[in-house]
Image 1 (cartoon, rainbow, N blue to C red):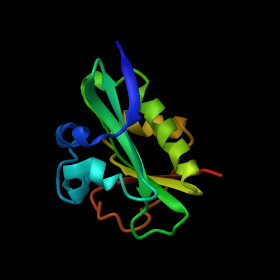
Image 2: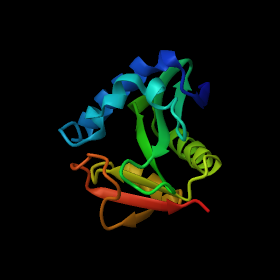
Image 3: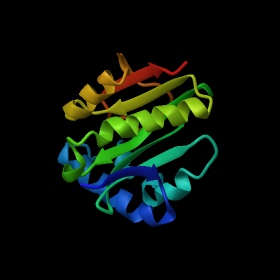
Length: 161
């Protein structure tokens, strides 16, 4: 297996959109009020070419199998970013790519000057929640900012500095 994690390129947007639209329903998270319906899903490269953003894709043998990024938390304070759009196809799971992607995203968030990283997820994504907790994210009682993801039911925050 030849696996790499790299910054997103324009040619990755269709693959990342397909991954998000495949994985979210697998976990019962395809309804309204989820990241699957965000306009940025249609062009991840464009969305993460803005200031204070970063997105990384994971490839195995040249095929994009997942990714994740960071961006300012919508409706949040300027010191907080959000870990966003982190999803992996089944063939990308269980290989350490999620951990490495979170590490790259957290490093990027620090380099971009954020003090905190926030994320939203679903209780059905138990492996993801375990990963986030192992990486230092702490569960918080409710949502931050105004992401529009009213269907999410699990919330985490990490102090970066």
